[in-house]
Image (cartoon, rainbow, N blue to C red):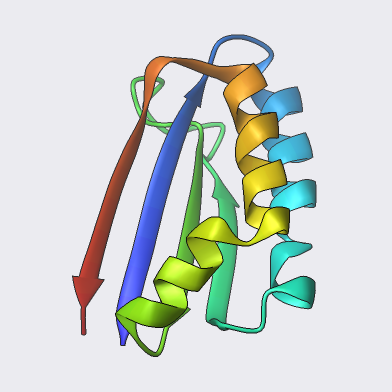
Length: 98
């Protein structure tokens, strides 16, 4: 299994952008069959403000499934949206086997 974790910082309206990003992200498992497990999470209001604002956690059976997810049109559309609200340099990602 491959776990894909990606975190974002938003330029402004963190709570509003995070809520909208979460709403859009939660639709991805409905159309991308390679996703085995999926979470879209928002940084807790009481958490350190230097934390990232939003994260996606997705599990895939194989690297090929993750690769298919990356180029899926719905994932590309989500990425285009994130690009409009993400802060400069506001992305971190890790993919690991477990």
